[in-house]
Structures are given as C-alpha cells and as structure tokens.
Length: 314
Image (cartoon, rainbow, N blue to C red):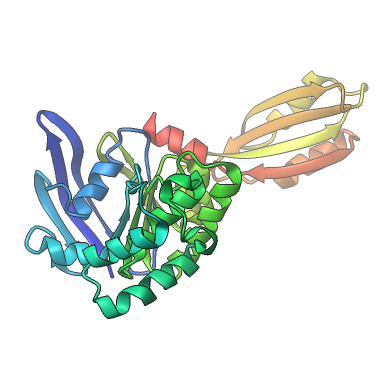
C-alpha cells in the first residue's frame, strides 16, 4: 500500500502552505514527517486524507487518485489528528462501535473489530469508562484505536505524543513500532527524539518545501561537513594548553582544536575537527603517546538529528 504525491501545492488565500512537493512512501515503511510548527506537515496530511483539496498537484493512495475517488481513499487510511477529537460523554467501547459504523463495518463484524482494538491499544482496563475520565495517555490510545478500527493499511499520525508525560510517550512509541511492522505509517512531528526512536526514513519539510528525504544514517553522512573527535586526557601540568592545541593542529587535515580544562575532574576535554575525508584518530593517538599523556576516552561523533534539523530549517 503506497502513497504518492506529485507536485502538490496548497494556498490558503494568498498564503502558500505547501509548495510543489513530491515524494512516495512504500508499503511497510515508518516515515517521520518532520518540520517546525507551520512547516506544512498537517496541511499535507489533511490533503492525503482528502479532508483538504490541493490547489494543484496529484495524490495517489494505492494507485487511486484521491481527487477522483476520495471515499475509496479514506477507507484505506487511518488518521489520528493532532487535536484527537473524542466524544467525552461516550464510554470507550461505545465510541469505538460508533466509529466502526462510520467506517461501514458490517454489524456482525463490529464486536470483533472493537475487541481487537481494545487488545491492540491496551484499553482493557478502561473500556467501560467514559472518555472524559481517561488520562491523556489513554485518550491517545483511544484515538489510535478509532484510527485503526477499520484495519486500514495506511496510518497517518499527527503529533501522537503531544502533551504526554515521559512514561506515556514510551508506551505510545512502543505501540507505534509494533504497528509499523504491519502497516505503512507516517508520523508527523517536530519532536526529534520521536523520529529517531521509531522511524526508518525521514522527510523534512520547511516553509512548505521538502528539504530532505533519506534514511537517518544517510542523512547524517550527507550533511556531516566535518569529522569531530572528542578526547578526554588526564591533566598533566608539564604540558600546557598551548602545547596541546599546537600539537593537534599540526595533524594533516585538522581544521580546529578546542581545549577545556576540567579542574574538578582533573581532565582536559578536547574537541578536534577535521575535514570530512580525514580520519585523524590514529594520528591523534600517536600525538597523545608522544606527549606522554594518559588517555581516558576518544570517540568520533556524527552530526545529530538536531544538528541536521537546525541546518535544514534555520
């Protein structure tokens, strides 16, 4: 089950929200749709679900043109919106039955569909409670259950962990990972840890335009402009900070060296940046030996998702 966007554009009056974007998501992928607030994430999801019509461009879900047969597209998609609209005066089971009927599930299949969602989403202990009595975490689980009640092959989740506490976030992430094994899943968020924890591909959107589309590890390699070595050395008063800086700067390919003395820990904390094509670790180790210093730790660090996000959306 795939999603394909072709030159999708959306204006609200004179305001451009989504600007000529194209991408394809294949069956079984968990894709993080990442961007700052106002980037165009929610607008794009609403167009995929056919709740909004694009100003121009095409959307295909499992080969079906959303503009030609929007109802058929909706039956293939489960959607959890950021606001997670629920009926507070209904209990959990009645709400899921109501949504099953909206999704045109036959009466003889509704009980099985509801029981399945109660089990999958961990709602057994609250299934007879009114929704108004539920914690935010359980309300999110009810929202997921209604999105999946008709067993769609595609799930679109817009900020599914917004407002949850750390324990609830871990629970929802675990559930999303389990769902991703069986369905095509798009997770829209601006929380970087969310994407890193559950997604195997990242699409970054900013000001309505696609800025990146890659696996997290490929994105890191692509944007990494320098190799960075973090070095911890035992402090030795016989060697000055100037000696250290000079010694490491003389290594071929090294572009900058910063040295910080941590007096409390009796350490030097050193950051050495070299050009992307140079792995200076072996030479750094030789210089440490030459200076007669004790090495506590040496590691080469990659650009974090936060670094990548800032660079692409600044």
